[in-house]
Image (cartoon, rainbow, N blue to C red):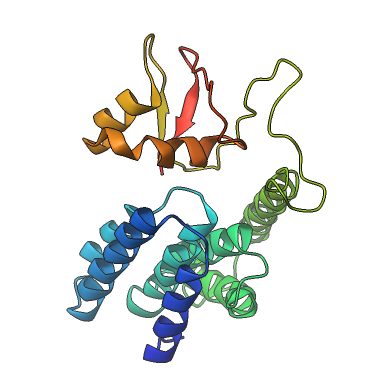
Length: 231
């Protein structure tokens, strides 16, 4: 499984169509280019670090998981790592342009993992049972993530959209994806103050609001102890 130039160009097109805000998307694409540069100069560890810095559990990160899956499969010959990232790709983008390839590798990777663990010799019954259970658990986690994704209210203006507020008129908070970077709200915090802390730029408060709440109306009140996604 090799990533071709055509695949990378298609990925870039998919990212542009993802609907991310202009600044955030630009920063994300810059991170992808840095990771790809590390990959091209055979700095696998540097490429992994660069890709992992982009992961926040949102749909935009599917591309980074996909590339990490290839890196683990092709360069590191590590089917466990490849299976993890291809499964995360499917959890985030189950209908993505490379979902079929990711599913195909799941079957291939399971066989490679069996051979790797067995080191060319038959597995014991206990080892086979353990590996099967771990694989079932991984698939269950993917299914649960898909279910959570399906429960997210549609965006405002879309068919079946919700108001984005609860009965008290407070903004509904989006679920925090597994593995997302978070910030715990302290007393007196505002979105602007949090943006200054994490980005050194108050003007980026709206990125945090859009990543965490279904409504962009005014009057948003943060509560001490509240967990927020940091995109």
